[in-house]
Length: 249
Length: 311
Image (tube, rainbow over all chains, first blue to last red; front, side, top):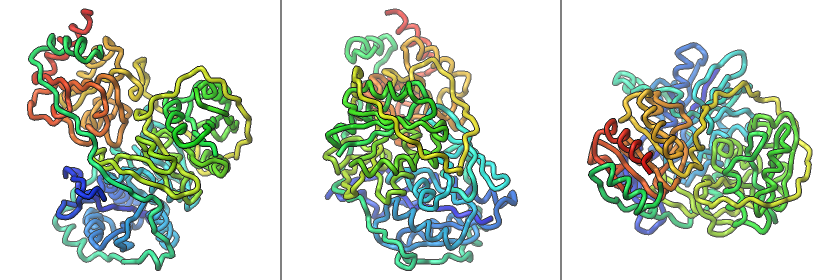
């Protein structure tokens, strides 16, 4: 069984982002970029499946500008076998990415597609669910634990009230939550080896996908700033302030 | 055209956040309908009919809807959607699971986690863990929107909308529900609690969270945690407050032993009053806290518990 994982290039989670002065977006020039953390979890899960013999090949997919090659290389260094990059400088929104993924899935016929539950840049939390819909497949979102057996996957999901177990038919789409696994760091020899692994580059047109954005971003602004308050010395002072100043207890 | 709110429920009542979603929906169109799909969902449908501003409740009975599997519920919403200008869901674990499937089946975009309705086609939504606010406009005929409940004041009760029975769409046969391991708690639900007591890595163990439970119970508060505390196994996943966990906006949020990573702040910085207790005076949590105490939480928390008791 092939497993396809999708990896997105995003601003590193440690970077404090800056809104552009003209309010058209967020400054990305000269900013450290990394793989979306939830996608690292997706890559790790796929590699573990291969190590256990449940998967035969792990393919890392990305979509976006040429630099997404680096993100795919990171996945290859972790242990993915080859990459597919749909290269475009156009703005890509979740529905478009889901359509690009579907086109690649149609070609590659994986048994599972594993993606991060959300990207930490646009915080949409849509692509995996949309891909499953377009394919007519089942989806296990917010996965905390996976068990592949007999043509189906048992998925433990992180939900509002705790955890939920579902069983879904394969082929299927999985979206990862934080506790699914702890992604490995790529070793230096594996980083070197990854440089030789193949990455196929495709264009959206060649896949017959119209990636034109459906949502128009009118403006991007700084959120209202919260002012730092005061430090109190004692618990008695805190309780007095909460009772009489804030009136919240 | 009317707006359709899709309501999650437990069989007896719709979730509290449905009233927030209805309030958001009322800003998008002239009339709000609520879909309550389920197996024996009569009581839940009745609870939806009592929300002010709801003109009609659609109750769809089907055994397939008992556990809210996206594969089974999405076709029903897709069938109803062409009669509406918007389909709205609360951005909780149900809405996040189901709404994108509906959007893709309709070939429309989804606006995720709207915090403000600017006009029926324009919404404000947080990006980058709330460190930027994007105003987005959709040109799609049917608009699929999930809304962040804490940003819309819940519609009041006391309404009496008509309940109309509609046919279900059956099971897709792709997925099945096995079981749930839900956290049992007598405390107020985290996202709707007036006061939230939240603990982080500074608690050092799951056992030490008992101290926070005592404080929470004295205050009638919900109990939350940072990602670090959940990852360390101190508390279950449903306690997590933050960018990828729950978003809360209580009157009072008490952050104990939480350093305040931006991912955590994303989930609580809309709280009315924030208190931080941390031994590190440089901790970023103090930059958003109204009141901070620098010190040993193991000393301060019991003191605080005793002090709030003496009213």
